[in-house]
Amino acid sequence: MSQEPEYWIEVGHITDIPRRGARCVKGPGYTVALFRTADDQVFALEDECPHKGGPLSQGIVHDGCVTCPLHNWVISLKTGEAQGEDEGSVPTIPVRLDGTRIFIDMGIPMVRVA
Image (cartoon, rainbow, N blue to C red; front, top):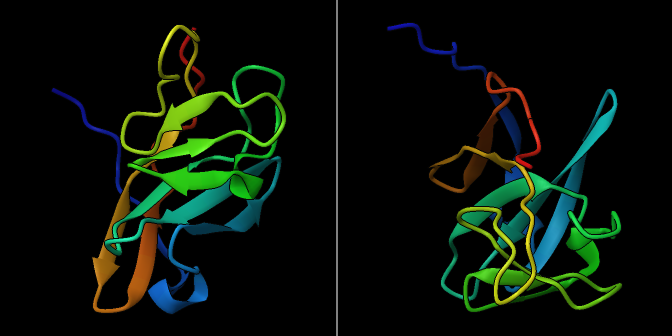
């Protein structure tokens, strides 16, 4: 069974992200939004709402989700799935913490699930 290689890259420290807030990491052709919850969990998603492409990094982080600032879609930080009656998802990126340092795995291609 083939498995994608892991490409962990350091993208900052947990203190770079405010609690219940977000910061972005830009790459060629994509932007990753890093989110920090009130209990210091860190998640990474593509910074584009599946509804109309709103910047999720500018949304409100709450209860393990982020609310898109454009049309109030609620997206799970863990799964990238739209919540409630909305349908769609955003790619998630694996995150690893090493002390206060944040690493994301860019070995997995970001593919939007239809």
